[in-house]
Length: 424
Image (cartoon, rainbow, N blue to C red; front, side, top):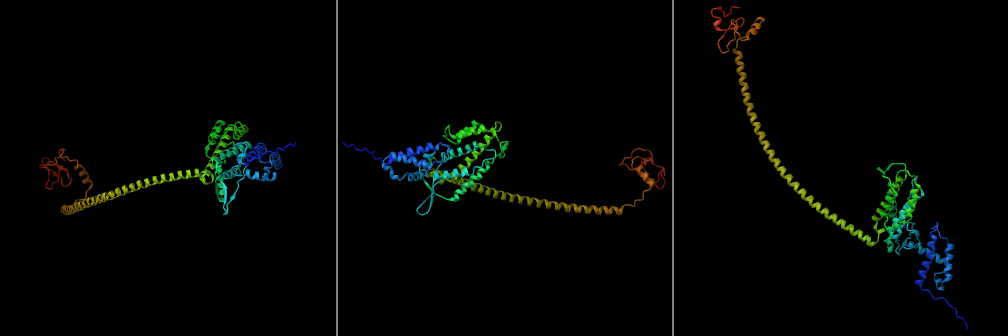
């Protein structure tokens, strides 16, 4: 009896795809965990595929030779959303290469997730360690960068969306990142302050807390914390607080740059639903701003109208006050002119009277020394005979030579014919 030949049953295309992914990709994943994670020997790949071909049915050969399958697998591996099959740990860099797609009309497009890969490459190319930076700090920098971008890229990886590629926009992103990171050109570890502010220092506890705040969902065994621990151990004990604070400042600056670039270009880095949500929020904000502006404009119009009314009332009030002041000044000027005329007449009258008195008065003799002496004696107001005070209202007798004055009763029978006293 002839023994029938047992042939393996045919494998469906879906089952073949699952086998190839689960087997080959697992092999590559295990291989990529080695030190040389980004290089896989082509000969070893072909050997693995050849072994797979030999253990499967002939239907697997529809994919061609092992060499052709390797080429096809590389295309699949570099496809937009396939990097997740080839990554090892969360903090490892993207292994995919951004692919540019050309439409039938000649337009150049790229998947949104590939823009995150380009953003990562821009950040890595512009990493300029300071003279005192060690390899562990560089590890913290790259791990934080990759964790941050992969968290941001999770949403766009769920659905492939293509955007028109514009090289000028990529250049603008590079320039923005470079200028932003120039702010983190901090001090050496011996400085006590940088960027015009005093450094408070840092601790590992504060650093870990900030990392979990900036990277939600990051695992405890993430490479970031391993690099951070290594970096902390590599610092001198005296320099640790300042070096940690300096490293934190650089990471915060990089995070701010990346967030600014992503938020400024939602058409490149966010899904359309998110982009529409942001646009709706922006429209709502603009409408609110417009309402605020309209209210402010109406308020300003009302204020201007009120001020104009107040200005008009003040002008009319000032006009009335000016008229009153003008009338009062005119009245005062008329009074002043009237008084001036009166005083002028009175002064003229007094001058005429003074002139008449001067003409009627006898000539005054030139005073001699004896006359001056007698005048000084006369001024004391005493009688020249009895030496008692003279009454100014009573009549007196005056010597025509010495000008002494006497009581009338004191000179009776004592004066000569010339009205001269006995002393003279």
